[in-house]
Length: 454
Image 1 (cartoon, rainbow, N blue to C red):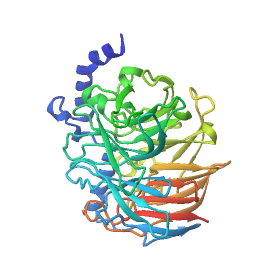
Image 2: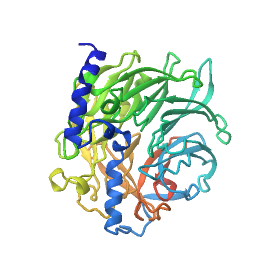
Image 3: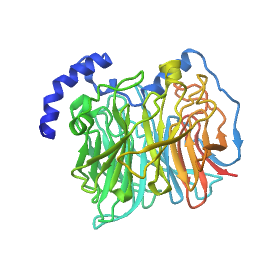
Image 4: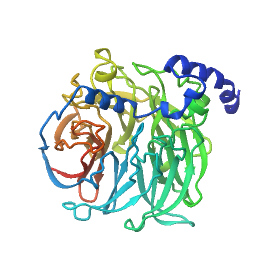
């Protein structure tokens, strides 16, 4: 049976499985609002509010870090991921349920890192979130300069979702170029990536979580943005249609599989899709119109909930590091261990990766719930890794030999102006400024932090 036939033949069965597995009605109840890739974070925030949780520390803590600069980004809160390109940082905006401030991606001049200054905003439509942003310098017959791609999700009932492209060659005067719209009723692009290949093609990647369950569409989406004013889908991949694996079945206590993030490697010849409950999937996209499955890396031995949030490579691709965003202490209980930690694998044979080690903080090994102690994102420079670890802040650790912590920065707790999150540190994203060696972190409540490892 072909790809299309497999998809069409499975729709009714999928709807029934969604109904049975998730407790979601198989008709109107399949509204995308019921499928939230940030559901664990939302439930933790609700639990923390109901229990009256206050700051687990007075902070800031700067262990082997120097605090260089800080911006509250206007004080609106709901800050999401961070990206750095040249002298500018880009910080996304979160939204969920009935709170979607849609204040846009903040563009921050960090040329003087002691005084970061918001100089412009990349807009997102009302009722959406714009959590993830990537900026690259590209050169094509249609566009030469700095190109930003932003993932747009309809987090508060809006029906505009997908990718939004901006010319940020002058970051103080960004120009919106185009929207690429994901299928109707699909949630939209959660985490994204951007690359220009050796053949000149510019590819944007989108993880559209739950799209296969909701509307039978690709969850790993490849968009040709060589002409960013006219982006077009060029290829895609989905768990059931291409691997024969049912996304309505998973592992751990929240048993459902969906694409959470995408990341290009090998100059855009490979894309990794981090799947909740289905592993980190390696796809050969040398022909982006027809992605080919290479292999899956799953958390072994399994003492986590299987929620593969994101990944990064190290040592020229010989290693991969997986970040499971594990909510076990809040959602699963002791059966599934503590919070999420980083898992390291030998990737010299991508079709058969090999577990090497894991790295955790004392809090992520615990069952404490006065903060949110799972890893979220990790970036690598040489033999050093820097992880955004929510209430553990930015964790600096080394992976040569036995992984071990080198330093930690935890910002002072700040209140959420929306009253949704408790007053605790919640470090969402981390970025490395390779030119200066500075580390940038985005805290959901308090904004952008710039620190220097010592």
